[in-house]
Image (cartoon, rainbow, N blue to C red; front, side):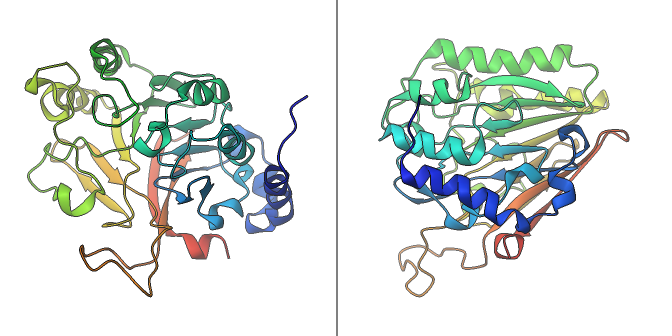
Length: 305
């Protein structure tokens, strides 16, 4: 039998005691009847802890939890940190999806994450008319993540296959940590928005033509033409933007969300101009019957009041 540290048990207690943060009737609904997904990115507060406000949310009120990476500052330094995250987010649930951030994998021990989630770092899943594609864009760009050409190519092929075969879903949601899509449209001031703007990420080794704008984007436009709406969400926000949305002329939606939990607003950094506005999280509203998906950036402090 697994024995959890007291801190893990405390989280279970918080999730039960603080259920009043959400409508009790929504919590008790069957999962397929719940209307909202919650997306959380750049959530770390300490090496082994997420933003304490997020610990007070009862995630049973949501249809699913989508995680945009950098959950803790050193997610895989200690195995207990994975247990702590699992106690909060139920990492193995088919309704929890986690796109890895560089802080999640830079200490190695990747098997701990795969054991907890039961999944690889990139995969697809379909439920209730939504297809989720989780991307690992740390390959070749983060300490602790080997630059594996085979994995790069498999990820690119995974999305291309979806573009060729996706038929019944109303939406394709692509979850990732870093912003690798900043050059799909000249109207995106990527470096002013993302904590790290990684426009150089390639889906093939040694091929600049395999960057997202050239290798993937056209496939997504084809899906839009077939009536399948595409939403790309990156979780590496919070420092420069509290919530960003951009729709390209072809109809593809790009979103950035994330927290800046480590910011001391009384003594902000002087070397860079950070965003001192309140943190927000991204809430998706999904109407299965009408095949509609909408979203809004919600003030986190108001959400947990």
